[in-house]
Length: 155
Length: 274
Image (cartoon, rainbow over all chains, first blue to last red; front, top):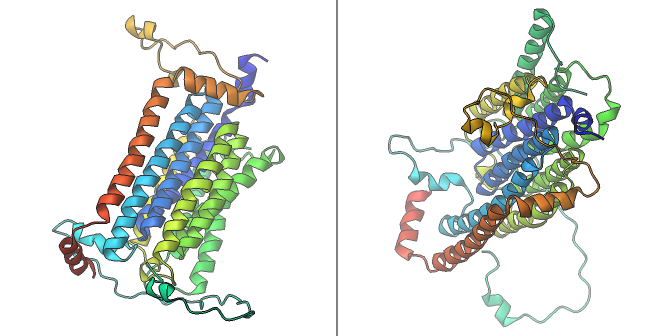
């Protein structure tokens, strides 16, 4: 099989479809990072954008018959792992300071000319929270532990 | 299957393609706006309408190309990319962050399927292992640690849903326009000129087409490893150093942050809560 037939076997439509999937993932991630207010969901959206870029790079790599794109995706994966580690540490720090995962809790960092964002109305939960089944208690009731009572239940 | 017409022979055909694309972009923006959590009435009908519109937009994006003839050939690609795209949309529109993370896991499965179809076997497996196995579990861990009960109010509203949906849809429309205009005629334009040619000042002459690699060979992973640790050895070393620095930095921030300044914390809590 000569290189020319290989290139013909990986033609333009496959490249275009791969690029299209990458573009859709990137756009959805962009919308997510612009709109969502939960810090974790914002990072998920950033990872979504990285996935879109990876798909595009691999599509180009297949089209050109070159490993360069795939090597670049390996580096993207490593940098994403670093970013996730550092970002999660900062998110945890922010959470312990404000008690919320809301990015609006940090709006004191905004520009001085911007008005304060206030939630005027919060939509109610339209569906009741699901009730999960519980096991019927069985066996002997354990003795209450004095040490366990001192430990806090929630973070 | 191609999502795009190979060439636009007449103006009328191009116009109809452009019109289809415009309708697809508009319906995508509307569906994202309807699906995103926002203030005001948040009933079920807008969400159903948004889902319908989103499906219509996806179909329009597929129909925009007129070569749906050999669909069976690329059915696997179509299925895995639909899984990836639909679960990505669910990731950003889901109210509960935990559900969003789980939808993101499904999206990763779809993306790794796309990578496998595109011939990147190692990357498809590595995406599952690194993302779904490590990063996503860390995200879920933090989520469940931080929000033990119920849905926070901030997860039910979003910042500027209409503007962002329009921005994302328009970006997607522009990208798909430029993707549709790609042509296979002159691949030499995308290759950098060889060093000798650049030194000689022959920047306009087409560079010789480099040696292409059989990306679908059986020893593809071994070849990728050879490429990674051959040509890109210094970059691999740099990434190793980056990982080490990130690890040390994360540990340092945690250990310093735990003994944080109490006064600063209280002032932040007063100023930070709306």
